[in-house]
Length: 445
Image 1 (tube, one colour):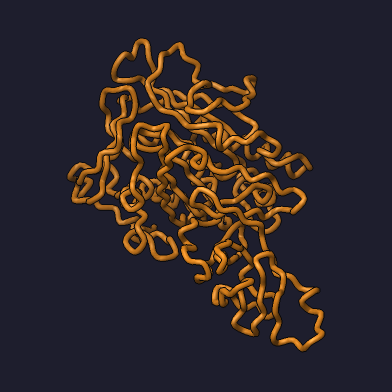
Image 2 (cartoon, rainbow, N blue to C red):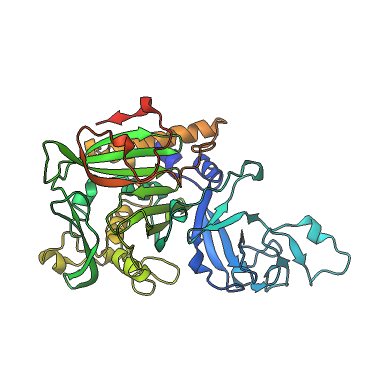
């Protein structure tokens, strides 16, 4: 468990909180590129680390991110005109370039020097892998932008879902590194079947739910044995289960990678690989992007965007509103279907993403970790907490943020799943080169 003081240190990211300051030293997943589909189109509101911002694509197709409130009278730039050269506030016509410079002030007389004294807060932006990324830290500390793993392969097929979660960022990360829950919470979708690894996704209809799916996994073992390895950029861990076949000589292994502070590479299946981006909007709300992708390294052919959103329960206008707020909430019990549970559904909640979200939100906006009772299946969760609390304390004492100065990793590492010989070293598992690891920090359970 965490003490209340350590829980606050882990969870709080707003204002001058140490965790938020450390997160600002990384490139932050801000929104999907498709939310800004049209050059010169309407701005969108983006909330990151407690700040209200607007993102826009200028008429030349370049993306900018500015503070939402106009520095003049604090009117929202969400209503601004998107013109050549930047956003023009409707209230008095002040116009701001993508870097925050005032380029026009029609309400000021000729000779006014206000434009040289005032600058709108603006953040550097990169666009890659269907996502817009922002850097919110000090300019002198801006790190090299390391493109997502799915931008380096050949013939990439990419699908992204998005949903706003009414819970703290750490609860979402912990859900992604908790392997043992999948055998229960997601048991409708993850079925046991003999084989060497997870089979390709099979779309079907169950319990009256269109767009349901099944992934066959080669194990009936619900109590995985976890081993964790701390890296320069975060951590890797393996969940070992007894396979259905060759259990005396083999293990079913699932390797998850956490790249601090926002990224999880979760085990793939035969159709696609998986990436989760967990972006803190503020202390109690989190932006969750779930990416399914495939390239020439996978035998499968990926999954279409709308099928992916149907599968994950994140269709705009059906599952989430136009601002990606979930239509399933604590107030309506996440639309849990008790009749479907009587007919065979374990959770009664459609979509693995929504099953997870129901659990994350049911804990409260910031859960009281002092009241937990952790067990062996929570080793990765416990190590994540200890690692991040240690990292943020070190950062607050003047040390570099976790991941700073590391060699690029997005293009080098992969998650993994499959049946392996018991003699094989799990540290070598993955589709890319194994990153630099601290062997002395490997932990077992």
